[in-house]
Length: 247
Image (tube, rainbow, N blue to C red; front, top):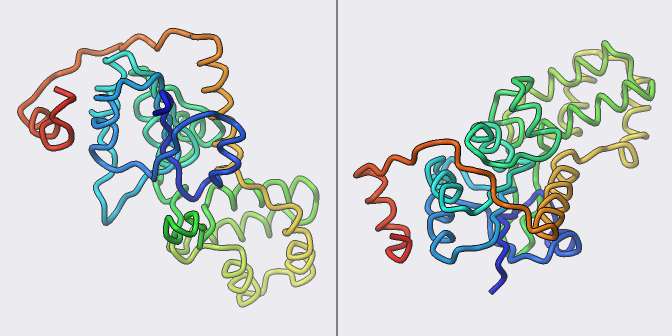
């Protein structure tokens, strides 16, 4: 069993992740998963992807439980970036542009990183586009003068207004054409998109795995737990339900 565990789903293909870090790659994190891992005392935990909506999301307190047990917990890209932004002041290690944007308040909505994806047996293929990827791609297109600032910002607004399940460049471009945005710019953007699209979530995930590899290679000490961990009756029940061995 590998001493390093990373929760991974649609953000990064597993074969790419394995090239970056020798780790045990687990499905997207859910509530109770980190508690169970703590019983195994891994050298480090990384969180990239996590389930939400129909499945209870990873609990903040179980991440704090890992930190106070001396296990470094890293987060980036998706659920990892959200939890790291919320818990970085308590010792969780956030990595990447998405984490920084949430930490600094430039992003607030959870739907910025949400995507629809296929099943595990197919490798969790993404079936929609994350808003953070759309923002970065449009920013690059404006910087390269493929889109004017006014058209780029309007496309960004159109994409943001879409439900995350329906979000994608194709849908946004069709709506942009329907409301009369400049056709020549939209055509240029379509032509540029196959090579110009930037996957910010994937880039941040790779960066986090490299940070973990360097951290483990230097045998850096775990960040000090900067909090008092309060054991409540609710927590004790969660602990018993998740993993009696962790007690």
